Image (cartoon, rainbow, N blue to C red; front, side, top):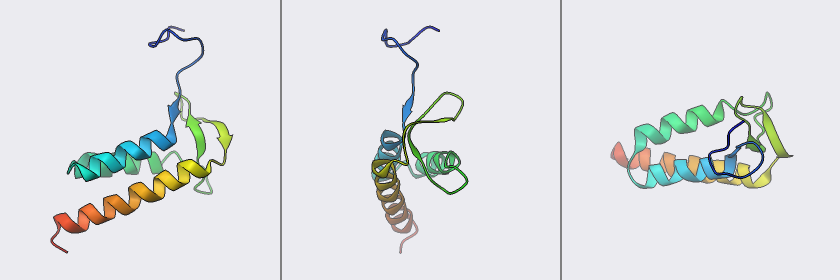
Length: 91
């Protein structure tokens, strides 16, 4: 398998960083993309709504499980997204 960064091992997605990205999108006014990304990420939770530290290319949970930092980032992103959506609706 070819790596894009030149380092050994498979590429993985850090869930915490994905939720930080969503929060940044919301803060920058990219609400449609933030909502779409948030909904996509929520779809990766397991049957109990729990996330691991990382996701593999096929959506498999990797790394520490369950990951508290990921869940804190999810909450922070959800709160910011909610705040920005209310602001855009004039509430």
